[in-house]
Length: 401
Image (cartoon, rainbow, N blue to C red; front, side, top):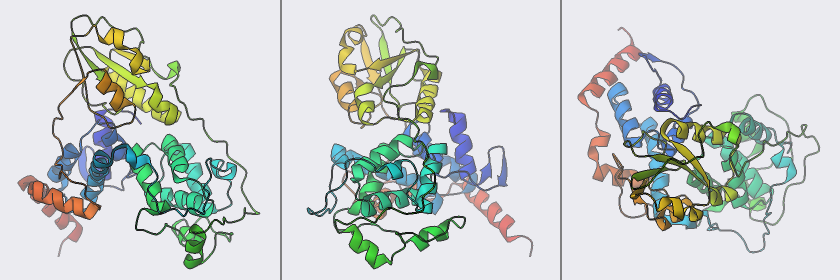
């Protein structure tokens, strides 16, 4: 997977059920891939919605378009909650002691719970699992094995190509039991029903009421007697390898010229002729290491728009930044990066087409959707070209009378 606009548009059209070059429907690929391009700012939500509106007549009244809006809702929650989003706000009982590390059988995909093991193996092999599979793994780890949800979220975020930092943490927090909500549990039969190729009895095969009681008690389920061979977990890297990029680390002369800093979530088109320096702020990655696949994706995106790469602590680069006339970068909420850019005196680049912001924290996606409808009703209406496309599609599906 390449961090390019071509790849993003190709993914968007396939997700919309269309061939990139012709109006021919086909099954989409992994639905979460588009969120990777949105999260790294290679494509904006506004652009994606406009393309679907023109090509298929889709609006925010359609479920498929709302799947894109979910990305903006998560960003909305992050803007209002800030770093507290990564803190423990679950309804955990004081008598439950949660593990501060992931058990070896979970880490090696050898729990003996077929759907959970299959999801972890798929995560390691491709970096792509469905939201349902994410919930299965989280529910098993947190509520059955008593793993701290923050530990599990950091582990999954490191391996997952499609998950943004806030989205993964919010999902694990929800499964653990958000304030006012019960923990999320899944019966073994329900998980096996979703994956017909994996069946069999296990200790997890309990009625839902029993699973809920177990989730709210200090007890854990015993280890399975029948387990698959352990799978070695791919390494998560706190520092990128020099073999993964062709970018030079020799900085260009900055004396008296404006400079643009490019962080991993600002991989959109290059802004102007000024020097562009890719920034890897290591204090963030010490806490949130990435898989090789994620590193290669980000570094590949930087290669297309940057003149050089800087790796280290931004607090130690005041000297060479002071040579620049001005320092620009796209704003980010990622902890460590946000504070470092602020301390360096960077000027935030304006967003080309910002998504409407309600101005208050919406407690649910449905409330957020209603607020967006009031702020931007045009997003819920098809353009004339989109209406024609929708009519043509409907006629094609209906067929001749």
